[in-house]
Image (cartoon, rainbow, N blue to C red; front, top):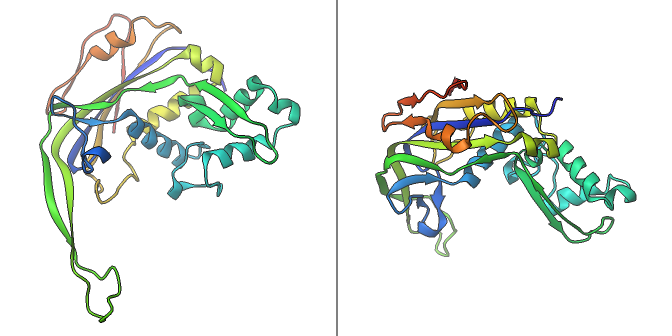
Amino acid sequence: MAVLQNKIDFALIFTVKNANPNGDPLGGNRPRTNSDGLGEVSDVCLKRKIRNQLQNSGNEIFVQMDESNTDGKKSLSDRFNSFLSTLSKEEQKSKEIVAQKVCEKWMDVRSFGQVFAFKKGKDTAEVSLGIRGPVSIQSAFSTEPVVVESIQITKSVNSETTQDGKKSSDTMGMKHRVSNAVYVTYGSISPQLAQKTGFSEEDALAVKNALASLFEGDESSARPSGSMQVLEVVWFVHNSKSGQYSSAKVHNSVKVDSDGKVTICDLDGLSPEIIEG
């Protein structure tokens, strides 16, 4: 696979309707908002969803969710140490070789990078290794302040058996949701860092496809099927490693209004590909 040679910038536009796109544990799991009242989806949340889509497409992923665990490993440490034990003792002593091997094996490592700082295992050496990945993505923010609705819910089934055999008391709870909003996030892929991790042209295509299908199979009670939808992925491929324009200028050329209409300002010599979700 050919290592990525051209800088890439991108924008992702998606809608949220009667869903909680990213709950804030410090705010009672209400949808995240910033100080201006704009809805927010963290970069960590977005990378989790990208990882899920990449894994669904058959790529090996290091940071797996418990429900999508494919190798039975109970922790990142177990997963890494198990892989490390497949290398020779000489290879384990070389951080350069270990870095190369983990990037070859796990796509999310060669995409986003990873910090490996695990204690010595039974058959493995102690490792402290940091890898910088070429793919970066910002937190997503809504185009306008969001309206957060809260509803009270009741769980009326028996959770516990009572001593007298009667039905236990109903349990009250709360659900929070964003009524209707358009969110935008921006990202970039660096060929310089791709060179170090082996991130390829095929990997970039896989990331683009993952963005376009970001919420497929991501349903939950907080995000019912169809409540979150990718409108467009705007994909800029520069003609060189350094790029014709700064990422900030490219990102600022993509304007999105509250209805989700996308306007792209012309940048001489740089035409984007538009992928509909």
